[in-house]
Amino acid sequence: MKNNRLERLRKQFDDYYIDALLVTNDKNIFYLTGFPLMAGDGALLVTRDQAVMVTDDRYATALQDFDNDEVVGVITRDYYGAVNKLCAGMNIDVMGFENTVSFEVYDILNDLMAADIVPCAAMVESLRAVKDDNEITALRKAAELQSAGYQHLLEIVHPGMSERQVALELDYWMKSHGAQKASFDTIVASGENSAKPHATVTDRQLQAGDMVTVDFGYYVDGYTADMTRTFAIGNPGEQMRQVYQLVNQAREKVIAAAKPGIHGDALDHAGRFLINDAGYEKEFQHGMGHGIGLSIHELPLSYGPGRDDVVVEPNQVITVEPGIYVPSVGGVRIEDDILITEDGAQRLTTAGTDLVVLDAK
Image (tube, rainbow, N blue to C red; front, top):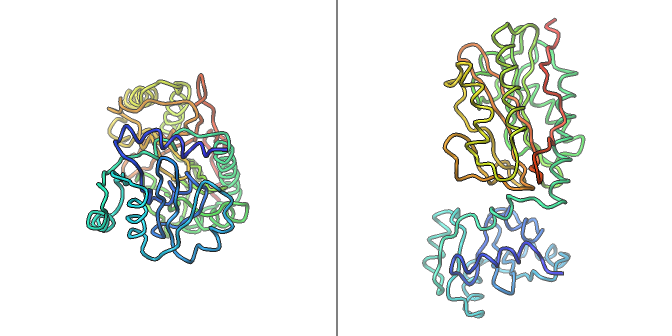
């Protein structure tokens, strides 16, 4: 049975006027082959009829055990010298390479390759944007585990805990229940810190009146969910309660509007107009969401104002994460992962979205 992902990649070759593509991004190599090559440990050369994994002897045994008769391995410490020889032996005149390579790798290729080399943008990433059934199953599992992890936090968090302690408790629970690792540094932002969209964890202790934002992502079966919830420690005050309801309504509006064919700016506007009309336009300055999958940010990398170029497709999995951040007061962000279906969208995140107020004692 042909590897459908490799075949779909090859169908793009004519559009880029290339005979082969050198894949160096480890996530893209895994997506195309299923082989877990670590970043910097080699490359995958995809031609019109072959796929060759070029790596070193640390992976020799793993390649022998690798059950994929469409991918052959070349063991060497001279990765790009081997790629040059392969291209010469297969009469490759033009080789594409991912335009995300470091300048060091580009300099090596430019100096070494006898074939012409052409930078190519997002060839594999565009394939990754639309998920198959197995990927959707993994993403759903990841989202459900994160929802359970958040529920665990609500049961143990109390005033006097530090942001760092909350993050460590979450990390331990997630990994103890099947998560492989975090896909980014967990955000736990309390009180005034919650007014910073990308706050870093500190030793600040949670206290009465705080809004607390927790933003986290964990890999399950190789795929990562992305979830944010905000809760209160005791009474957060009327303004923050109103802000919470506004953000939650904006999230609901975006999910209700999500469907195949909608443009990124229109999807964003479905929720942003509520926040703007309430006078918080300056307090919501980031995009409405992004794609997720093997990486925490995948195509579409962002959708928001001015992103008419983004068009939502069936079987994409994207985040919806409106927020309002009031300086010196606090902030609220609520983020769900949703699957775009044939006629709408389905929430993968199962955690509730009503404001949770924990005991301040």
